[in-house]
Structure formats: C-alpha cells, structure tokens
Length: 141
Ligand code: 5GP
Ligand code: ZN
Image 1: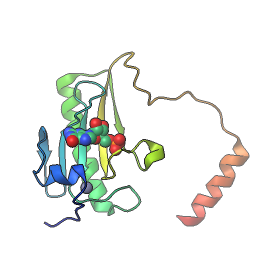
Image 2: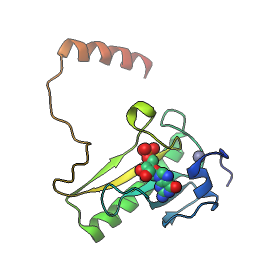
Image 3: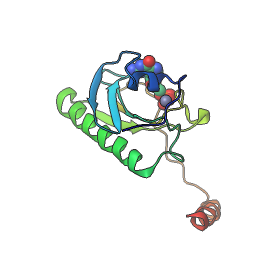
Image 4: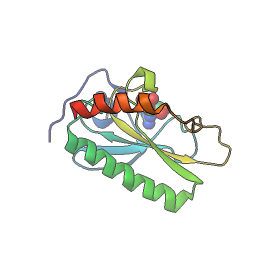
C-alpha cells in the first residue's frame, strides 16, 4: 500500500523505519508507538502511515483507521496500566499545540493531580453567539 510521504517529517521517518520507535501495533494504514515525551507513563500515539498534516485533509477512511488503532491502544492502556482516566487528543495546527504536522491521536493515561493542562472549567456561553456560529457552520455542512 503506498502512502503520501514527506522526507522532512519525523513520523514519516518512523513509518519508513529510518528512525526507531517502541512500536505497539501496525496495520496497513496506521502505526502506534510510545511517545518519547510522555505526559504520564503509557502515553502513546496512533499515527496514520501516510503524511496528512491535519483532520481537514486526511481521507475519512484513514482517519477512521487511526481512531480504531487509538481505541486498541487505549484498551491496552486501560486494562494493563489502570490509569485514573485516559484522554484521546488530536491537535491540528500550531494554535492547537500541534508540533508534528502528521496526523496522530495521543492516548494519554491520566493520573490524579498530574498537572496535565487539558481540562477546562465550564463557563456558560452566550446563547446568541452560539446560535450565530451554529448557523454559519450548519450552512457549510
Ligand atoms: P503534537 O504536539 O503534534 O500533538 O504531538 C507530537 C508528539 O510527538 C509529542 O508528544 C512528542 O513528544 C512526540 N514526538 C516527537 N518526536 C518524536 C519521536 O521522534 N519519536 C516519538 N516516539 N515521539 C515523538
Ligand atoms: Zn509525515
């Protein structure tokens, strides 16, 4: 199966076997391996084999395959490591904290008081503003 690649991309190099990784799983469209900067022990990544930077450009079937792989890894993390919780996180663009522009889903085990800054407080939104934006989005779906 051939995939788009980018010669300068660290994850493409991992997919090609040019850079080592602690590989957990692989299928035709995806690979999963341990993150080298774990937020907690067991932090892993489910990665598309092809080089698609973000959620808006990756083919839907490949994204679905990455989600399936993330679920497999999450199940292993949950049953084996018994974390307090698990976040699946997928960042798109610099503003969202994406540092590797090759689509991946983080499987992040959580521990009590781990200081991982992903949670936010509930703050009720402005209904009119929600509605205005809802109309704009609905119109392009
Ligand atoms: P992002 O910031 O794009 O959502 O996540 C990129 C992730 O890739 C980070 O958590 C970072 O630790 C991880 N990462 C970056 N370079 C490498 C690498 O060479 N090997 C592995 N295993 N993980 C990497
Ligand atoms: Zn890549």
